[in-house]
Length: 441
Figure 1 (tube, one colour):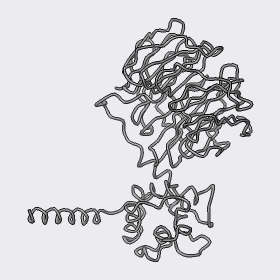
Figure 2 (cartoon, one colour; figure 1 turned 90 degrees about the horizontal axis):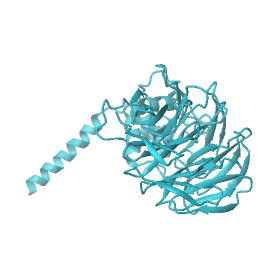
Figure 3 (cartoon, helix red, strand yellow; figure 1 turned 45 degrees about the horizontal axis):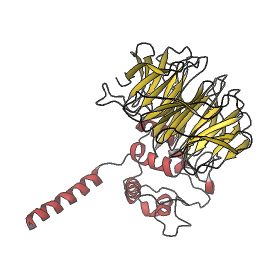
Figure 4 (cartoon, rainbow, N blue to C red; figure 1 turned 90 degrees about the vertical axis):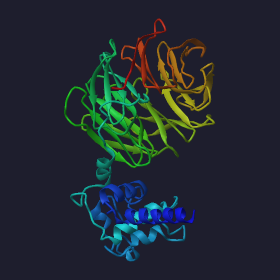
């Protein structure tokens, strides 16, 4: 017994020694930590203490303290490391947040003591660019099991549907359910898809939780690489084109709502109106307003051109999962975990009613001229009348919880995606599915 314990102890010591012997990579090990925990306060938009570390070149320059942030080979003399281990919460970095885990602090110490070497190419490259390179992987040639469908989007002509995959987007023929194309080079998790209303242009939002997130624009018919619109320290949750396609809105884990000019890809505005993750964004039918839903239990209506806050809805008692405008634009429908759909006035933020009999925990919704569609974790899709909020019919067909919905451009059909990887295409006129397929290669 003592001999076995001794062997285990020797093995543990050998493992620690082996880990310490592995060189620390700035690109793969240090940049993701600094990007995730430090660039919010020490980046281009907000350089507290006149110090930035959003590139390796800037990381080495002093801020207001005039103390060297990094002294190669000497972590004890490096201000960056000293502030991470400071005992006083008011002085410790990151401020007003949990300290870095011991293993990440140890990693930074090892990197500095080993000479603070840089392996990311030009020292002027941004940390987010380095992080993106480490986050992107190749999609599997064949899926060992179907991936959950977390996002769907119809092409403008309604003939194809894009589905979320693992490091990829897949395109499927609506009539036959056949795979048309696989688009790689995408984030690990894809949380939202939006197809431009007139052009063959697909917006993709996703990332790796608590590490990196991005919005990308890709031409589904071309072999050109995707255009990256932004790199953020957390995953993107939602993306939507304005009805005329000129503007794109996106939101996610960093609590911001960002607007982009579709033609140039340039970010035109960033708003931080929520206190927690923004789960969804959706435009009104005329494109003049945007509604957002957040884990902070609120939904907000925003002027899509000026960014002005127009109304706030605060009657949900749980994180708001999704919010959309009713077709007439005067009302908003929103759903939170474990609650019925709330209907409220878009200009006042005041509740006007509820939709019940939605199944167990509806989590995604669509508003159409023929009714309000919800998908729930009890494998059902339901359609309600908006006028009197009464149920029209429940659609059975899924064999797992419904995670995604998408409306066809002509409004006559819609698609739903299940956690088991299955996609169903439904006819709104007759309330039956017309095609079903598993959207995993």
